[in-house]
Amino acid sequence: MKYQIGDTVLLIHSNEEGKVVDVMNENMLMVDVNGVTFPVYMDQVDFPYFKRFSEKKLFPQKKEKKFVDDLRKEKPSKGNQVIDGVWLTFLPVIDIDEFGDDVVKELKLHIDNRTETAYHFIYKLHFFGKPDFELKNTIHPFEHFYLHDIDFADLNDSPAFEFEFSLVTPSKKKADHFETSVKLKPKQLFAKIEQLKKKNEATFSQLLFEDYPDKLIEDRVEMGKLAARGYKIYDASKAREHLEPFRSVVDLHIEKLTDNWKHLSNFDILSMQLKTFEKYYQLVVLHHQPSFIVIHGVGEGVLRNEIHEKLRLRAEVKSFVNQFHPNYGYGATEIFFQY
Image 1 (cartoon, helix red, strand yellow):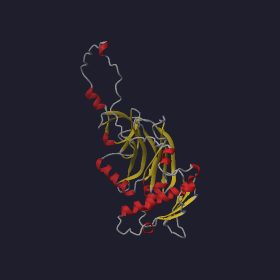
Image 2 (tube, rainbow, N blue to C red):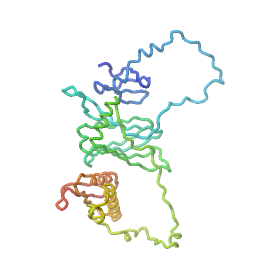
Image 3 (cartoon, helix red, strand yellow):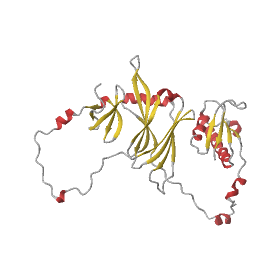
Image 4 (cartoon, rainbow, N blue to C red):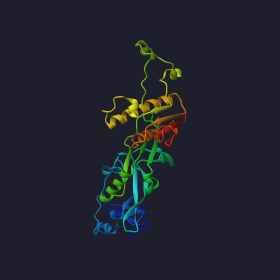
């Protein structure tokens, strides 16, 4: 092995020096540069000795005198660090099989905080909608935070990478928390890995958010002015009495929603189905119902997957299941709530 843990190496593309902190496989190293750890391919680094020798000055130059007026009055800047958001980074660990071919063994997951703000975060990994891994921690500005490894074979099990962020230093103008998720289909992952091989790059990333969101400001309207304009004013404690009745079961087959559906595009059909789902979902929640059944059919699973993606981000959802039902087969999802 050309390099060992503890070796000083030179990054060819940036001309920086760092130390090897881990030898990941025959092609890749983990390098630390000024406290930032990241992976590199071995052909992207070299030993720095030739550079040091070539830059060594045989005849030292005479230092010029500096006067008080010439001294810097400000600290030098830290450098041009790119500020472009918080990213989820995937590092494929490549091994060689018995036939001599490169195969991806696992993925190493990291969070890259390319902002000037520190965040608390909660990370959750789900397979087929079921929790598998959870981590709570803090990531500092321009920090590269390692999460965990995931077997490459598990990428066929519909992984969902879910995050909840909050500010380490709260701000009245910023949201209390922010939720986001990443869900990559196997075909997308395979395509990204092939692109890495062609470009000779080590990682690929998915943007979690570019700017932490502002707090939503609720408009305050004087009730007397609304009443004078003819609007009905209800007591908030009795608001549920004026709600539209909820449904414990809603059928989202398009022919159940409209008679004039044959001219609609697939996008229009899906949009109408999701809008109907949201309407009756909210009614069920407002009426504090313990459960809700959504009939989405089987088909290619597009509507089901969209609904499941929404449910994973709802705090009031305790659990949901898509299993065989005597009345609906596998074409329905049952949702259970916690209030």
